[in-house]
Image 1 (tube, rainbow, N blue to C red):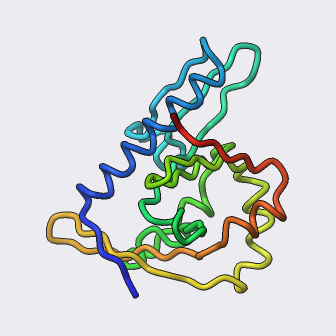
Image 2: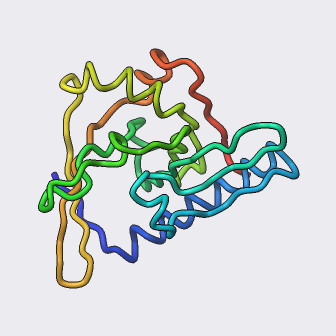
Length: 168
């Protein structure tokens, strides 16, 4: 079954996800700074939404993904193809972010995953996981996103450093 979304709905979920990540990271490191670079073309093609500056450490790139229903199902949706009609890769594959902040909006849970580590684990076993599609309408255009459905338990068991936080 393919789910369909409007760009307005997708953007609303993304904004809520960024707000939750922002609140958790700033509470974790008071005095740190978060820069929203999601609309900056220099970072869009890199798949980086936030830059997190903590004193004495190099800045970390954060890719934020908001999922409205995944917590109930216990699965991640790893985006492999962003726009099937244009054959563009999904951010899970191309992002240069250090951390994937995967937000289950309905449960207010944030899963912080070291992107390089989870990608290195996932790619060799990608065929083990089913693919699903979503459709997003932007004006008159409709595009299809393809992702792998990966159980959270598989990632937690296999990937060190995966952290789950419940947002206040």
